Amino acid sequence: PLVSMKEMLEKGKENGYAVGQFNINNLEYIQAILKAAEEEKSPVILGVSEGAGKYMGGFNVVVAMVKSLMESYGTTVPVAIHLDHGSSFEKAAEAIHAGFTSVMIDASHSPIDENIATTKKVVELAHIHGVSVEAEVGTVGGEEDGVIGGINYADPNECKRLVTEAGVDCLAPALGSVHGPYQGEPNLGFKEMEEILNLVNVPLVLHGGTGIPTKDIQKAVSLGTAKINVNTENQIAQTKAIRETLAAKPDVYDPRKYLGPGTEAIIETVKGKMREFGSSQQA
Ligand code: G3H
Ligand code: ZN
Image (cartoon, rainbow, N blue to C red):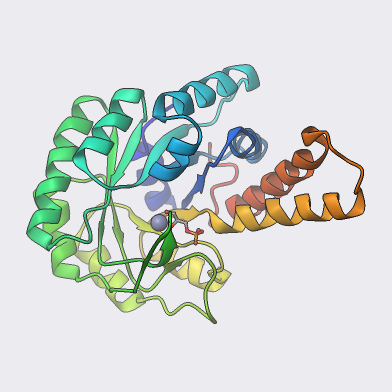
Protein backbone atom coordinates (compact mmCIF):
# COMPACT_ATOMS: atom_id res chain seq x y z
CA PRO A 1 0.00 0.00 0.00
CA LEU A 2 0.87 3.65 -0.49
CA VAL A 3 1.67 5.12 2.94
CA SER A 4 3.56 7.98 4.58
CA MET A 5 7.08 7.42 5.89
CA LYS A 6 6.13 7.93 9.53
CA GLU A 7 5.42 4.38 10.61
CA MET A 8 8.06 2.71 8.46
CA LEU A 9 10.80 4.96 9.84
CA GLU A 10 9.70 4.64 13.46
CA LYS A 11 9.71 0.85 13.07
CA GLY A 12 13.17 1.00 11.53
CA LYS A 13 14.54 3.17 14.33
CA GLU A 14 13.02 0.89 16.94
CA ASN A 15 14.28 -2.31 15.35
CA GLY A 16 17.71 -1.18 14.17
CA TYR A 17 17.41 -0.91 10.41
CA ALA A 18 17.07 1.82 7.80
CA VAL A 19 14.60 2.12 4.94
CA GLY A 20 16.12 3.10 1.60
CA GLN A 21 14.96 6.10 -0.36
CA PHE A 22 15.71 5.33 -3.98
CA ASN A 23 15.29 8.21 -6.39
CA ILE A 24 13.19 7.67 -9.49
CA ASN A 25 14.02 9.19 -12.85
CA ASN A 26 11.57 7.49 -15.18
CA LEU A 27 9.19 4.55 -15.54
CA GLU A 28 11.97 1.95 -15.46
CA TYR A 29 13.17 3.17 -12.04
CA ILE A 30 9.69 2.77 -10.58
CA GLN A 31 9.40 -0.73 -12.07
CA ALA A 32 12.82 -1.79 -10.79
CA ILE A 33 12.44 -0.40 -7.26
CA LEU A 34 8.92 -1.79 -6.75
CA LYS A 35 10.10 -5.21 -7.96
CA ALA A 36 13.15 -5.17 -5.71
CA ALA A 37 11.08 -4.15 -2.68
CA GLU A 38 8.54 -6.90 -3.24
CA GLU A 39 11.23 -9.55 -3.80
CA GLU A 40 13.04 -8.45 -0.62
CA LYS A 41 9.80 -7.96 1.35
CA SER A 42 11.08 -4.51 2.26
CA PRO A 43 9.36 -1.18 2.88
CA VAL A 44 10.57 1.40 0.37
CA ILE A 45 10.59 5.13 -0.33
CA LEU A 46 10.47 6.43 -3.90
CA GLY A 47 12.34 9.75 -3.93
CA VAL A 48 11.31 12.38 -6.47
CA SER A 49 13.44 15.48 -6.92
CA GLU A 50 11.79 18.54 -8.42
CA GLY A 51 13.93 18.11 -11.54
CA ALA A 52 13.01 14.44 -11.93
CA GLY A 53 9.33 15.26 -11.37
CA LYS A 54 9.47 17.82 -14.14
CA TYR A 55 11.34 15.36 -16.40
CA MET A 56 8.60 12.74 -15.94
CA GLY A 57 5.86 15.24 -16.84
CA GLY A 58 4.86 16.59 -13.44
CA PHE A 59 3.98 15.32 -9.96
CA ASN A 60 0.54 14.09 -11.12
CA VAL A 61 2.17 11.87 -13.73
CA VAL A 62 4.55 10.45 -11.13
CA VAL A 63 1.71 9.57 -8.74
CA ALA A 64 -0.34 8.02 -11.56
CA MET A 65 2.59 5.87 -12.72
CA VAL A 66 3.39 4.66 -9.21
CA LYS A 67 -0.22 3.87 -8.28
CA SER A 68 -0.87 2.12 -11.55
CA LEU A 69 2.28 -0.01 -11.38
CA MET A 70 1.60 -0.97 -7.76
CA GLU A 71 -1.83 -2.12 -8.82
CA SER A 72 -0.65 -4.21 -11.76
CA TYR A 73 2.25 -5.68 -9.74
CA GLY A 74 0.01 -6.40 -6.76
CA THR A 75 2.49 -4.64 -4.47
CA THR A 76 2.04 -5.69 -0.82
CA VAL A 77 4.98 -3.88 0.84
CA PRO A 78 4.61 -0.32 2.23
CA VAL A 79 5.59 2.30 -0.37
CA ALA A 80 5.99 6.05 0.15
CA ILE A 81 6.18 8.65 -2.65
CA HIS A 82 8.42 11.35 -1.25
CA LEU A 83 9.40 14.80 -2.54
CA ASP A 84 13.21 14.97 -2.30
CA HIS A 85 14.79 18.33 -1.38
CA GLY A 86 11.58 20.37 -1.82
CA SER A 87 12.72 23.95 -2.36
CA SER A 88 9.68 25.91 -1.18
CA PHE A 89 6.32 25.72 0.59
CA GLU A 90 4.65 26.02 -2.84
CA LYS A 91 6.50 23.01 -4.28
CA ALA A 92 5.75 20.91 -1.20
CA ALA A 93 2.07 21.91 -1.42
CA GLU A 94 2.01 20.95 -5.10
CA ALA A 95 3.40 17.50 -4.27
CA ILE A 96 0.93 17.01 -1.40
CA HIS A 97 -2.02 17.96 -3.59
CA ALA A 98 -0.80 15.64 -6.36
CA GLY A 99 -0.95 12.71 -3.93
CA PHE A 100 2.61 12.37 -2.59
CA THR A 101 2.54 10.65 0.80
CA SER A 102 5.67 12.37 2.10
CA VAL A 103 7.67 15.53 1.47
CA MET A 104 11.06 16.92 2.31
CA ILE A 105 11.26 20.67 2.76
CA ASP A 106 14.88 21.67 2.39
CA ALA A 107 15.17 25.22 3.69
CA SER A 108 18.62 24.44 5.07
CA HIS A 109 20.19 27.20 3.00
CA SER A 110 18.19 29.83 4.90
CA PRO A 111 19.08 31.06 8.41
CA ILE A 112 17.70 28.70 11.08
CA ASP A 113 14.72 30.89 12.08
CA GLU A 114 13.59 31.05 8.46
CA ASN A 115 14.23 27.32 8.01
CA ILE A 116 12.01 26.59 11.04
CA ALA A 117 9.24 28.95 9.87
CA THR A 118 9.09 27.48 6.35
CA THR A 119 9.28 23.92 7.65
CA LYS A 120 6.50 24.57 10.19
CA LYS A 121 4.22 25.86 7.45
CA VAL A 122 4.81 22.70 5.41
CA VAL A 123 4.18 20.49 8.46
CA GLU A 124 0.84 22.20 9.13
CA LEU A 125 -0.41 21.49 5.61
CA ALA A 126 1.17 18.03 5.32
CA HIS A 127 -0.24 16.67 8.56
CA ILE A 128 -3.80 17.63 7.57
CA HIS A 129 -3.30 15.28 4.63
CA GLY A 130 -1.57 12.50 6.59
CA VAL A 131 1.67 13.29 4.77
CA SER A 132 5.01 12.94 6.59
CA VAL A 133 7.67 15.68 6.57
CA GLU A 134 11.46 15.55 6.50
CA ALA A 135 13.58 18.69 7.00
CA GLU A 136 17.31 19.44 6.85
CA VAL A 137 19.84 21.31 8.95
CA GLY A 138 23.35 22.00 7.61
CA THR A 139 24.43 21.39 4.03
CA VAL A 140 24.95 18.14 2.15
CA GLY A 141 27.94 18.56 -0.14
CA GLY A 142 28.26 17.80 -3.84
CA GLU A 143 25.81 18.26 -6.68
CA GLU A 144 22.08 17.82 -6.85
CA ASP A 145 20.00 18.82 -9.84
CA GLY A 146 22.81 21.02 -11.08
CA VAL A 147 23.31 22.88 -7.79
CA ILE A 148 26.80 22.46 -6.33
CA GLY A 149 27.48 23.20 -2.67
CA GLY A 150 30.08 22.71 0.06
CA ILE A 151 29.70 20.63 3.22
CA ASN A 152 28.28 22.34 6.32
CA TYR A 153 27.92 20.24 9.51
CA ALA A 154 24.55 20.49 11.27
CA ASP A 155 24.46 22.25 14.62
CA PRO A 156 22.82 19.91 17.21
CA ASN A 157 21.00 22.74 18.98
CA GLU A 158 19.53 23.96 15.70
CA CYS A 159 18.41 20.37 15.05
CA LYS A 160 16.63 20.26 18.39
CA ARG A 161 14.92 23.60 17.71
CA LEU A 162 13.78 22.55 14.23
CA VAL A 163 12.30 19.27 15.44
CA THR A 164 10.49 20.70 18.47
CA GLU A 165 9.35 24.00 16.95
CA ALA A 166 8.35 22.74 13.49
CA GLY A 167 7.15 19.24 14.47
CA VAL A 168 8.79 17.27 11.67
CA ASP A 169 8.53 13.48 11.43
CA CYS A 170 12.20 12.92 10.62
CA LEU A 171 15.36 14.98 10.37
CA ALA A 172 18.28 15.05 7.94
CA PRO A 173 21.25 16.55 9.77
CA ALA A 174 24.02 17.12 7.21
CA LEU A 175 27.10 15.55 8.80
CA GLY A 176 29.69 15.31 6.06
CA SER A 177 27.86 13.30 3.43
CA VAL A 178 27.83 14.40 -0.21
CA HIS A 179 25.58 13.86 -3.21
CA GLY A 180 27.32 11.88 -5.93
CA PRO A 181 30.54 9.84 -5.56
CA TYR A 182 32.95 10.62 -2.68
CA GLN A 183 36.52 11.83 -3.22
CA GLY A 184 38.15 9.25 -0.95
CA GLU A 185 36.41 8.00 2.21
CA PRO A 186 33.51 10.01 3.64
CA ASN A 187 34.15 11.70 6.97
CA LEU A 188 30.82 11.45 8.76
CA GLY A 189 30.29 13.34 12.02
CA PHE A 190 29.25 10.45 14.27
CA LYS A 191 29.93 12.45 17.43
CA GLU A 192 27.38 15.05 16.35
CA MET A 193 25.02 12.31 15.18
CA GLU A 194 25.02 10.80 18.67
CA GLU A 195 24.48 14.21 20.21
CA ILE A 196 21.54 14.86 17.87
CA LEU A 197 20.08 11.41 18.56
CA ASN A 198 20.02 12.29 22.27
CA LEU A 199 18.44 15.72 21.65
CA VAL A 200 15.65 14.79 19.23
CA ASN A 201 13.30 11.84 19.30
CA VAL A 202 12.64 11.42 15.58
CA PRO A 203 14.33 9.07 13.10
CA LEU A 204 17.40 10.54 11.36
CA VAL A 205 18.01 10.60 7.61
CA LEU A 206 21.33 10.12 5.83
CA HIS A 207 21.63 11.78 2.41
CA GLY A 208 24.30 10.93 -0.14
CA GLY A 209 24.08 7.15 0.42
CA THR A 210 26.15 6.35 -2.68
CA GLY A 211 29.66 5.20 -1.77
CA ILE A 212 29.31 5.11 2.03
CA PRO A 213 31.19 2.06 3.40
CA THR A 214 29.11 -0.63 5.14
CA LYS A 215 30.75 0.02 8.52
CA ASP A 216 29.64 3.68 8.37
CA ILE A 217 26.12 2.61 7.34
CA GLN A 218 25.96 0.29 10.35
CA LYS A 219 27.28 2.96 12.70
CA ALA A 220 24.75 5.50 11.41
CA VAL A 221 21.89 3.00 11.83
CA SER A 222 23.02 2.27 15.40
CA LEU A 223 22.80 6.03 16.06
CA GLY A 224 19.16 6.42 15.00
CA THR A 225 19.45 6.71 11.21
CA ALA A 226 16.31 5.06 9.81
CA LYS A 227 16.33 6.41 6.24
CA ILE A 228 19.20 6.37 3.75
CA ASN A 229 18.97 8.10 0.36
CA VAL A 230 20.51 6.52 -2.71
CA ASN A 231 20.41 7.93 -6.21
CA THR A 232 23.78 8.05 -8.00
CA GLU A 233 24.61 4.37 -7.41
CA ASN A 234 21.51 3.24 -9.30
CA GLN A 235 22.23 5.67 -12.12
CA ILE A 236 25.79 4.39 -12.46
CA ALA A 237 24.68 0.73 -12.42
CA GLN A 238 21.93 1.32 -14.98
CA THR A 239 24.12 3.35 -17.33
CA LYS A 240 26.97 0.82 -17.15
CA ALA A 241 24.63 -2.02 -18.13
CA ILE A 242 23.18 0.00 -21.01
CA ARG A 243 26.65 1.01 -22.26
CA GLU A 244 27.85 -2.60 -22.15
CA THR A 245 24.77 -3.79 -24.02
CA LEU A 246 25.12 -1.15 -26.73
CA ALA A 247 28.85 -1.88 -27.08
CA ALA A 248 28.32 -5.64 -27.30
CA LYS A 249 25.39 -5.36 -29.72
CA PRO A 250 26.00 -2.42 -32.06
CA ASP A 251 22.99 -3.40 -34.21
CA VAL A 252 20.41 -3.20 -31.43
CA TYR A 253 17.84 -0.39 -31.75
CA ASP A 254 14.78 -1.64 -29.83
CA PRO A 255 14.88 0.36 -26.57
CA ARG A 256 13.50 -2.59 -24.65
CA LYS A 257 16.61 -4.56 -25.59
CA TYR A 258 19.04 -2.06 -24.07
CA LEU A 259 16.91 -0.47 -21.33
CA GLY A 260 15.96 -3.93 -20.01
CA PRO A 261 19.51 -4.77 -18.82
CA GLY A 262 19.67 -1.30 -17.21
CA THR A 263 16.49 -2.04 -15.28
CA GLU A 264 17.87 -5.41 -14.13
CA ALA A 265 20.98 -3.62 -12.87
CA ILE A 266 18.83 -1.22 -10.81
CA ILE A 267 16.91 -4.16 -9.32
CA GLU A 268 20.13 -5.86 -8.21
CA THR A 269 21.59 -2.63 -6.78
CA VAL A 270 18.43 -1.83 -4.81
CA LYS A 271 18.17 -5.38 -3.44
CA GLY A 272 21.78 -5.19 -2.26
CA LYS A 273 21.08 -1.90 -0.45
CA MET A 274 17.98 -3.30 1.23
CA ARG A 275 20.02 -6.17 2.61
CA GLU A 276 22.82 -3.85 3.69
CA PHE A 277 20.38 -1.44 5.40
CA GLY A 278 18.61 -4.36 7.12
CA SER A 279 15.15 -3.55 5.74
CA SER A 280 14.82 -6.87 3.85
CA GLN A 281 12.11 -9.16 5.27
CA GLN A 282 10.75 -6.33 7.45
CA ALA A 283 7.55 -5.63 5.48
O1 G3H B 1 18.53 13.13 -1.85
C1 G3H B 1 19.14 12.27 -2.53
C2 G3H B 1 20.30 11.58 -2.01
O2 G3H B 1 20.88 12.22 -0.97
C3 G3H B 1 21.14 10.86 -3.04
O3 G3H B 1 22.54 10.88 -2.87
O4 G3H B 1 23.11 10.45 -5.25
O5 G3H B 1 24.86 10.42 -3.51
O6 G3H B 1 23.20 8.59 -3.61
P1 G3H B 1 23.47 10.05 -3.87
ZN1 ZN C 1 19.91 14.40 -0.71
